[in-house]
Each structure stands twice: as structure tokens, then as C-alpha cells.
Length: 67
Image (cartoon, rainbow, N blue to C red):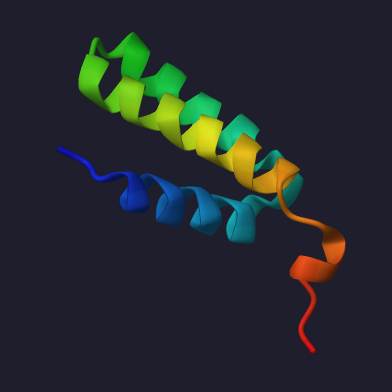
């Protein structure tokens, strides 16, 4: 079973790699696994997509800048 911290770590990696398109990428991966009837992986990527959305909505631009 995947722990919640792993979902948020994956979400943050997607944000780092894909920026504003991170949620789209997570949804694309969920769809990939849905087409292959891998329900567990699909649900995991849906959770990652939700985490990306949450992280992006709860991060201000000043939180991401280096000081």
C-alpha cells in the first residue's frame, strides 16, 4: 500500500518536472493505466493528480523562490 507521503512526493516531482502541466501529466498516466485495466495504478495516479492540485493551490509564488 502506498503511503500518503509517497503520493505527495510524487506530486512534487511532477510539479518540478512539468510545472503547471503536472496535473495533466498525472491524469494522462491515470488514463494510461485505466486503458490497461490496472485499477490500482489508475487510482494511485488519480491521488497524485489530486495532490498536485492541492499543492499548487496551497503554494504561493514566494514559497517557491530561493532566498
